[in-house]
Image (tube, rainbow, N blue to C red; front, side):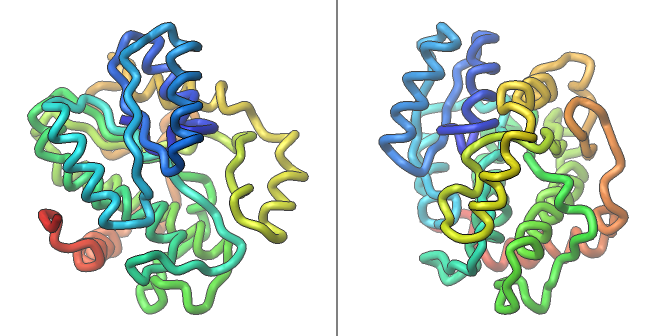
Length: 275
């Protein structure tokens, strides 16, 4: 399963996995864009076993519906790529009353992963990949302002990307001995439609800088390798920059912060079983 599969790294990762013969589920928020991506992934990979599921990762109900729909159709999940995300120049609030950058980049994937964890464990050996960013460096988890009342696009995005790394490390500990690995990856600064859904200065800056970014196809090769390479199958709780293991920020190794973030994330998304 690849979230955010309608464009950019998500779509090209789906192509890469499908080209290796896998059954691939792409998760998209928009039906029309999703159907176009579904057709393109099939055409580029030559693989007919591509499936589309719709969900908005910023909506907890939508995430729960996605997990229920997946479990009703499939009994195996060997690879989960938590890729969907966004950066917003202005503060937006979700249907759950949560700040959207934090919700769509972290909480949605935290909830989805936990809801699917029983299927993933039963599918072992299996892998969970969380797509993060070098933007996590210099960031902190603002537990006194997780909902971004003092909103800054870069602060909110950096916090969410740091949350991805902390979540990965804590998840890896919880999965020790299960045959399921959890790693996170900065795929590179990628030329995609990222940030273009939000009007304002952020979208303009990304548009101006995008010619200097790497292609989604190149970045997706790193994701595909981490998802499938036999030489990496036993590695867990690691941070990768492209295809190389690297050290993440000092803040990301704070175990108490990771445990506290997990507890807060549980509280904000609870209960996992709620329908």
